[in-house]
Image (cartoon, rainbow, N blue to C red; front, top):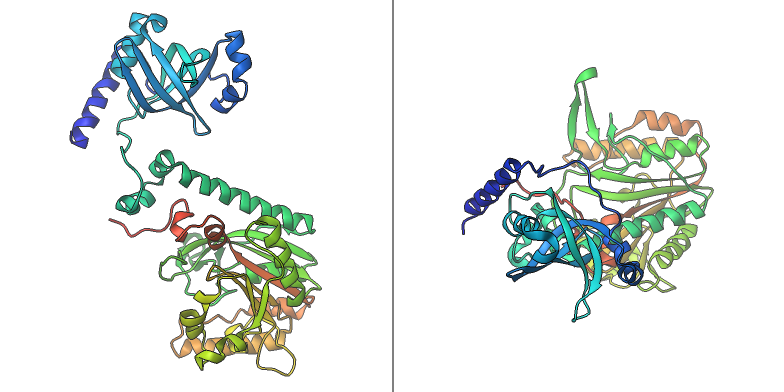
Length: 441
């Protein structure tokens, strides 16, 4: 049957509900507990024959004649429902059989019992409509044949694929574990602007917009770094922010133009301290994935076999080989213009943490010399003039802030999406971003 035909049948049922004086989209429900609660208290409730009211979506239906079983899912758990003509009465059973479909969200009042197959079940004494669905649930919603539609219609992906939902629950747990770790280590959570008059803090092309009220071009942030450093100048010694960053770049398994990150800064610390801090953090949030000690190697040592120190060569030939947890240290000065130089070298005090062939963390000993920082920005502006669209901009307001004095500090950025992909064994960031960026049809 064509989708339009199915939808028309459902519209006819919707009309019948309204003609019978039944609101197909009521604002309230008499639900007395969740399915999880009912399952947890099942034995006591079943023995007492206490009447309870559950609510959820019908995900499956089976049976014939005067007896129909159905699966009720409220987003937390599933329980079997039983609709019997003898219990519901002729009118109540007719309502269920003729006007209620798979995909509808209903309210079920009744008592709990176990079937001969030991299936926990609620026997309905009354069924009410909470939401009449006008489109059918997909019969099959998994595998590569539907991969694009899964991302475009994530709500269906979550409904039909429990593994997908579990990844996003895990994502939330990872974020909370990172937050708890930082708070335990005396970091203060803060919020800085997403809409910025000048983008900075990373080498990337921005998304540009216009603020009509003040007739000024603005940018979606590519990073919160320069604002968080202003807070160090203001005397906030340890700060962190969970951010959404926007970079006008391509999409692949490791990149999405809108991505989640956490950045944090600790005054009076350096990148050597930072490696130990990240090591402990990773082991705390994922003890089954990470074990001490992590490998430590310099950028130059890794690049010796390639015959080049160029960043693009590193990405093409080296990055994908860093499967085991690895700190790559001491990058060329020109690559990281916000980072403190190592004395008497052409490198900076920076590390990136890799695992599973992905960059997960970027961290520096932060540059706090305003004169040096101004010179670095000028060099970036020269690169921009020669056609480098990802070169960083001269931020004179930030230079002025540095001239008031920023304490020595270590700064960190963690890509949340990549970390979650690694910890959930996902092959692409699109698997763990609820609504990844997609080309319009």
